[in-house]
Length: 360
Image (cartoon, rainbow, N blue to C red; front, side, top):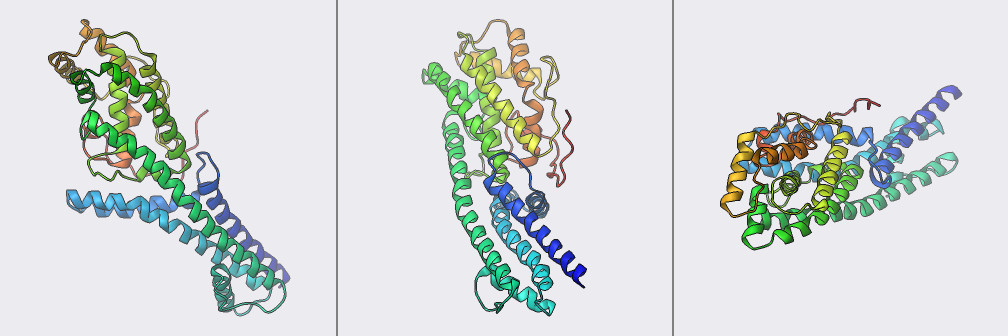
């Protein structure tokens, strides 16, 4: 009987520690580590929401997808609390709380600190105190977690909203460059690249530390952080390859920060991509589409390089660094349709519960 008690106590303790490790990794650890419990909840919830969205109309589909991440995020503390309650039941049972139903009631009372059931003496009193403290800790984590999440979301969306006035809705790289030229601001266009470089750096940090942010959709249903990322990268690539202006290293640094950020997010979700693409590798944008953009820039009196073939090769050489990973993230997030990104994304790919082993 003593052996059974020890095994039950060890089982409950292991479950509680597993749940606590999930909470710590999700909320406290400032790096892109994965929690199996959190991932399983988000993947399972994603499949339910996506199934409902596919059966809905266009407007209702966007509303359903917009609710997925916030609703699932609010379910997470409840799952943690439930896991701790379940984990303490065998521990209470092992220290002598009988029958099993009484151990369940005592565990629920201890975590919620409601006091409708409490032990009178013995080790059960210490367990009840510990569980009550863990319940308060979960509340404290939630209080600190939500402002952090929405702080990152707000900073992300400021840049996305700003891009709407500069590149349209949905944003396009050609519109961004032409609007800048029409207001005499090609020099001001160069001022954007350091801002977007900083945006991409924070995007990589926040969306791997708090991966739920990937699925937080913009307040405007026609906007998306994925579309903003693609449009800004394409515009920076146009600046570096096609415009007949002096070289600007800031645009090239913006491109590098951008594709590194998108790759980091893709790595977290187990999305395969080529880390070392060749400059002449195939991309999803066709030469005819680039030629149309080149002609529209020239028609708008934007200074473009005379060698159109070389401009295409240079632009494609930049685009290849983020082409496949951008489309894969579009397939994951399901943003509204936009040229050169979500309009050619592959079929929806639900995130994985178990990540593949990373190759060295």
